[in-house]
Each structure stands twice: as C-alpha cells, then as structure tokens.
Image (cartoon, rainbow, N blue to C red; front, side, top):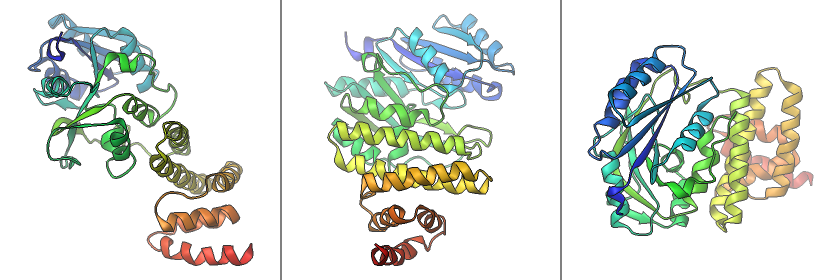
Length: 336
C-alpha cells in the first residue's frame, strides 16, 4: 500500500475555541486526500466547542469526538494518540487551519522519498508573514541534519508538532508530558531523531496568532521552569545521540532560560526559590563548561561559576550585556 492509500489520523485538541473551530475543521474535511480519521478531543470546553464537535461528527462519518474533563493540551493529544488507527498521524491546533493540499502534499513527499517517516511543511503566521524555510526545494533530511536545524534559527519550525505528518509507528512509545507547558520541546526532537524527514518548503499550515492563546500567555516562573527542564532533557538525549554541537546549543538554552527564571522569581518576590535556582545555575556552569559557540555566552558561563548573581544581572542588563560579560570575565580570572 502506498502512502497516498493510507488513512491519516488527524488529532485536534479542542478547548474554548468556538469562534475558530469551524474554519479549522472545514479545512480538514475539505482536504484533497479524503482518507482521514479526524479525532476531536474536547478537553472540557466551557463554551459551545463541544457541541460543535458533536455536530461535525453527525455530519461526517470520518469524525469522532472524545469528551474529557479539562486536563491540558498534552493529555488531549495523548487521548487522540490512544484512539488513532491510521497509518500516519498529524496534529492540528483548533484555532489554526490547513491549505487544502496539506495532507496530500506531505504524503506525496513521503512517497517520493523512500525511507523517510516524517514530512513537514512550513507555516504562515496570521496575522504576520510566512516562515522563511532553510531550503528552496523539497528535500529529505537525515536525522542529524534535522536536529542541526532544530538547534538554531529554525528551532520553532522543527519543534512544533503541528505542520508535520508522522508515520504511526514512530509515535508508538511517544506521549506528551502531561501537566507541563512547552510540551513540544519535550517531544518533537525525539521523533526527528528516529527517521529522515522530508521538508516541503511551502506554508501549508496557517498559525493564528491571538492574544488569548497559549503562546501569548503571560510568562510565569512555572512556565519557564518547564522550559528549563525541556532543554535539560534535550541535552541528555542529544548527547546520547552523539550530536555534540546540538547538545551544546541545548546546554546554552537551558542555562539562559534558568537565568531568566532566576530574574523572574526575584521580581516576583520569591527570593528563596531564586536562591535555589542560583545554586543550580552555579552547579550547571561548573558541570557543563562552555555554553555553546558564542564567545560572549562562554564568558557568561565562566562568570556564573564564580557568581551566579552577577551572571544573571549581566544577562538581564539589556543590549550591553555581551560587552559587560567580557569585562566581568577579567574579574573572575583575577579573583580565582
């Protein structure tokens, strides 16, 4: 059976998106590839979203609905994965939508590149511009190439679980981390390590930017701590995969995010927690050594070994921190 002949499971977590849900699901049901299993997971919506899901199921036999108490995005995706029976799986956020050829284009890319188990497109921000892809023409990337792009300016493109089509067996033991934010940071790179990926440099996914979405929600210490933990897990896994440059990049991300966390805890009056995180920053700076390719960040790591507080102040001082961190390095060398 060719890729184009396979059923694609579409997992759509739904929570209080009544105003956007119809456009989203219509874009799925109007795909040029009709062999779809559409799984709508109503995650305890308090508006009319759940009723809309049921209406879609009544209208189209390809749609199934799971109603559950509110448990968060990861739990909703995991419920969809448990119910999925298609040969391929893709995720779609309920306030976004697809080009009519999203599924068929990615299936065709997989069919044309034997051995690949993942296909992905770029996306367009609405409002905003389309993501500028790292390639001009459709190309198959080895796992190491995909991770190299993940660990750099194209991190967002390669991190989001949406705008991708996965062969089902690649997800057999994958579950999104329930109770955490930054769920894609914990998950997608692990799948990219398992198979070549075909990148289709066309914005077939439309990402709605709205003030009430998860991405636009206020930055909290809890949210930043999840980001730190995700980056630390990336370091462990990327080292195990033998990709030292990507692991070094993730190390830098984890330490920078921890410095932002310390600053936010202090500004929130949570001084004891800030002190605990500062102690973790010092230990991490000693353990990790360099913080990536940037000389300024390597200097900042040197500062953090001696004085985490100074490192945080330098990092949060604005545009002048790179210059100041180099001066601080001299102080560290003189005082050791």
